[in-house]
Image (spheres, one colour):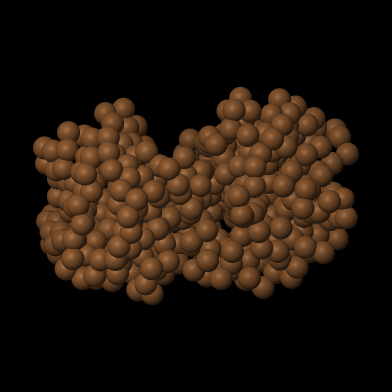
Length: 488
């Protein structure tokens, strides 16, 4: 029997700006260690018996990030489902269940382990123990979720009230299983304190263990509109290697909803008299959703003054603060309860108790069409990456790194010319129908309107300095004629 991990990697992580950006969000960042959040999510499944390669649901823009980060840890996904638009976790799980049902071809009923890609787990053994209990419940046709044993009256999490202990489950955290009595929205502090005292409530982790058939049956029962659109979009989709693209026009009509709202709240012991059981397994595994800078600070090692210091930082009479520097010296004097995050193109300074408001700041940046909410200076592409070095009226300077064996699309620009200088490696250049090689310190010039392509035929990264000149230098001034990565 195979267990199929389904990993939701569609989150934006706007409250972690400026580290998290729209096109390089939280799941793809290294926050708690050397691996990214996505990689840690995949790696913590290692050791659970019967685990298949993961199915990842993500945004079209992030498909190569998912594939590359999974490749780096030797865990290429079974499938990467590309959402044409974000519609939250209920449609994402529906697409994944349809894909796994398709994979099984009626030979078995897939068991799904559905997890967000951007949560931290401190105790992997405790996490795996809770998963194994939930798997046993799912085998009996229940829909199980993992509930986090709370250690504080946190107002930023949803809660679940546990009901009667299920027969056959072991007492104690990470072994017991209970009826899921009801979901409770994020409470105020007084309510949260009262809930904590009853010992009947767990934090909602957003992790679910269930059979594909169970989910499809319940989503069709409670949200037939979501089920119908997702089935049509999946059936009308196209396969591209490990990528699967549901029909974008059909999926655009799909309502947005979460697994909790669409199904789970309707099959709890309080609200639903049907046959399928909703169950919860308590988990005490050092869990955090890392939803804010304060949450990252909570799980980080602190100095004698309660500070979390990263990077080249000088802190004088600073207490209970987080100073995160990446590119230059950061000096902070006489402050308390602050978050300071410095990056090459943006700096955030915030009251530690107001970090939820960072999302509102990012919304403003987006409405003002600031690139800083979308991308870092270093922008990743399937062929490598580029980083803006300098820019001004009618010019822009970039550093390009093209991976061995990779190639840009065959393309042209209506408004800009490009000058390439090879810093290291070997470049294969296609220009106006001709091909030639460039070596270190050699250069090429591409005129406005001229078809061109840059490739790396070598075994080491190709590094290029690119100088763009022209009346418009936006990334949307690209007309592609051929592209090995199937970009439009």
